Image (cartoon, rainbow, N blue to C red; front, top):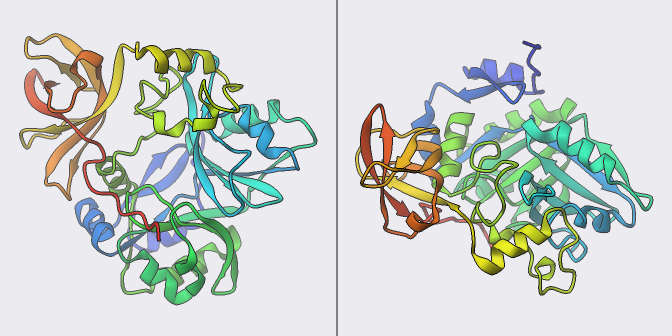
Length: 371
C-alpha cells in the first residue's frame, strides 16, 4: 500500500484527539472524542467544521472556459452568473456518471471542486478536452474546509461579516482574518454553511480561529456521512457510478433546462442521446430511492433489497442510523415497479428480511439560506 497523503490540518486533528482512517488515499479524521452521534447533532443545532482538503480544486482559465466545460456536463455553464456556483455531473458516452462536482464562475476563470477519489481521472478528462485557449490549473497548495450548521453564519460572521451577504450557491473571494479565501455558501449536510478554500500554509491558523468560536466543534467523516444521507445527498462511488445515469440516479434536476432535448443548447455532452431517451420514455429498470427502516437494526451498504416474496429487487448503496430522525435510513436502487413512495421492501441482513418503506429523500428539511 502506498503511503497515505496528509492534509495541512493533520497535526491539528491529532491534537484534537481525532481517530484517523484511510479515505480516498488520505489519512482523515473519522471522529473526534465527542463521537459520531453527538458530532452529527451538534452540526444540526450549532456549527461543525470539517476538513475536506482531500477534494480536488482546479481552475479552468480562458475566455472560452464555460463553453469547454459545457461539452462535458449536462449543465448550463455558459449562462452561470459571475459569483454563482452550480452542481454538475461529468457523463460518459453511455450516459453514466463519471463524477459529480461543483463549478463556480469567478469571471476570469471557473473554479471546480471534484471528488477526492476521482480527481486524477477528472483532471485527465478535462486536460484531454481543453481547446480554444483554455488552460487548466491544479490548485495544489490549497486546503478546503466546510463550516456547516444552523449557527455557521453566526460564527463565521463574527470573523468575516461579508459572509452574511452570501446566499445559497454564491461563491466569492473574501478575506477572513487577513487570509485570502474562496468562499461558497453551500455544503454537504443539508444545513446552511460555507465551504472555504484556504492557502495551505495558512489553513491551520485560520481553522484554529474558527474553532475558537463557541458554536463550533470539529466534525469527522463519520458524521459527515450520516448528515449527508439524512439530507438525501449522494456519495460518488456508492450511490452514483459510471454505470448509473442521472435518470436512474434521480438527478433529473441536475440537467439544466437549456441542455435538455427541447432546450436552446440541447445535448452536446457525452451520453446525451441515451439520457434523453430515458427521459422521454421513462424506460429505466431501476431508480435511486430513500428508504426508512421499520425496526432499529442498522442496514448497511451492500445489503440486498427484496420484495415480500424474497425476490431480489435492488441493493442498498448507503445506510446509516439517522441521529436526527432516530431510525436507520438507507439509500439504494430498486426495480422501478417498487420505487413509488410508501412501497414496503425488505433488506436482507444476515438472513433476516428487515422491512423498509420507500420514503422521500431528503429525509429531513434542508435549511439552505436563500435570502
